Image 1 (spheres, rainbow, N blue to C red):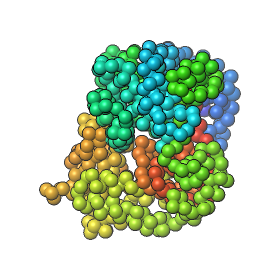
Image 2 (image 1 turned 135 degrees about the horizontal axis):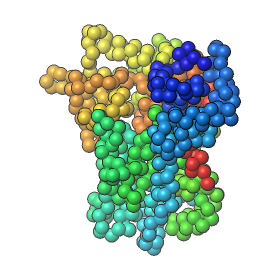
Image 3 (image 1 turned 60 degrees about the horizontal axis):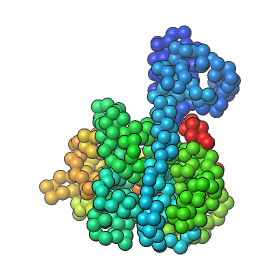
Image 4 (image 1 turned 120 degrees about the vertical axis):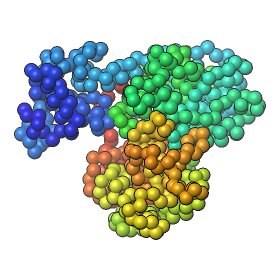
Length: 590
């Protein structure tokens, strides 16, 4: 088996070659497994799931057959110079039917251990006071049971709580209320509370939502003042450093906070999750908010979805929660050791029952392709479907949709520009093709330059939208942050970023790794929301299309969704469930 003849990625080939130099006698099947392990990471998996490849051929055009599963496992185990067991100091770790790069096996093992330890820790509370707090703070729900109140009761009695729910299910308002109840438990004692999100945009959204929820609470001014209202990015909290992978905060230098709330937790990859848990004080509370049905992180690992699997409560826990919350809680044995730390919020207060965006999201999420197409076949104020789109028609529609934003951008007012930019978003499944981000961004930029009578060679103009593609801790900018180019009174263009503490102005010359952001991938849109969303689907079948991708795109919209793509592509997406082959669920299984 000649690895040089295989169509492996450059990184996978280089890794296999480095292992060959380290162990010249290594079996070809081990080196190929190592290369496939790297490719799995590049595709968002945390390990190589051997049964998926064993006995098959990843490249049908080549005369190749991979070993049967048992044979392959034996061959890997025998290559002891390269392959070890959990905790061994070897480049590759074999755990049952999964092969890991050593660093990622360590991340997974450490994360599982930290979560299990934290999930088993309960917190002493004043039950009578808590019942009063929950009754007063959660007296708004018409739903029974009120899962927001149950989530608060759970979070206040444990050091770990995961709250999953779609848009408009009240995750943020639940957190503000439970924090108020927690502060009432402490009396006048100070409590260090940190609010974080994966991106600057998500942190700004979280801050705004927290401020709105705070204002509506029936609390005295002194208690309201003790509630936090400003979020920051997770990288900033942990102390990301450009020159090294280790964060400033780690097990040897933990964060000082007593309570950490993480929003948009589904965006966190395995490495960042492990670093976060490793940086917490042993007695800190951790509350994770997210949507388990969204796309997984761009990097390796669908961690939040894995952690939410197997949610359920034993009869004893149901009794305790019902007593505290005054809500009926049905017993369902948890299928995971973390199951009793998870609450699923199901009722959306944003979308009306039985129609529009909420019903479309439900049809997609349940795999109901026929229901999805039937709903889109009935045009409404919320939903519009262009079945046979032409790129020229799409560009005309986009020029019209972006016009209010470009008008706001020419004024140089950052607040007005970001407000207008948040009204409309163009999402694509991927980068390539006529309906991918590259072609659409280039075409739109050309049109916008002509419109402003800017030279075609000119790089900067009012409204040029950029997205950061690599973390830049020195500037406080991180992957996924959106910047808008705006003219200022000195006649120069500057790039503005919306952050939790306000708008940040950066000279264009200080930015290096960026891409145009009139059209962004669905992956990059996570943590953001827009009034209206237009989703452009590829013309041809694509491995990028999946049910989570379609669900994530649709749920970025608050009031209207347009889908430009054929019924075939919609069905393909709905029928494709994203596969993730981590071992985290297995480590946490009950």
